[in-house]
Length: 311
Image (cartoon, rainbow, N blue to C red):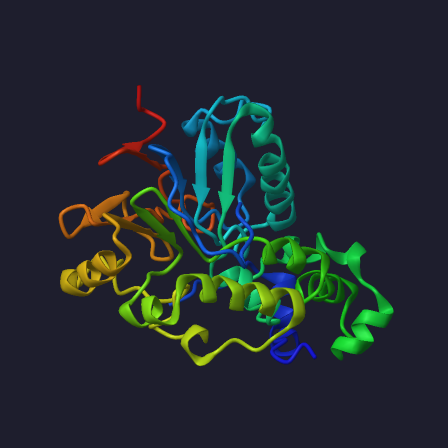
């Protein structure tokens, strides 16, 4: 059952206004350290295909036509491809196509899930742009809508729900993506990893999210939306608060890593804290936030922020 579908009280808003502001390896496999030394990282894109193409072009992976052309590249996108913007479906389909094209160029594109991907799977449609809602109308299915208890909803809502509810075509696509990824000495996650998450197990976190998306299995309490969830916490990314570097260090030490890359919280520019042990990469580069298009380049122990003005 699509227990958390919230289209009823917000439907008129969705149909007439833009959404309000909010205050890849198989996901069931354990992340493994790799020998990769150069990684390009993109933050939140929120339904903005133009921003997505600009960011990918900064990595050298794609050309102006949006085709993968880079050789021997590793690119990571840390989730929140959807919500707020008008081009959710186009962004999802484009990145899925790129992930398939990358191996033909000895490259890899790692796509992670963010909190907005999970929100859609749970029927939380509060931040969907009306154009992104209608883009899924063709996926409406009467039988499945009846099962989800939304047979009386508009076709656009039915299509979106059918696509993202556990087992749906897009939910199955998302189920193949991890929530937490480790490459070399770096951990990538949308919100942040805390000591309790390490104790629970990185592989178990990925498996739980995958089963939630694929089968509708309930998430354990440690992964429920909260300020301590891996996809929701801002403990490392609040720019107006001092980061608890001791907690960060404890996590990295236990995992034998050098740094963590997080998104989720909009920054004026990509920046770091705790002596570069955490990098915050969400610059709000979608039209919803009108932030800067920036990409983080990690090469061994060094980091570089790429912008459209970079050489």
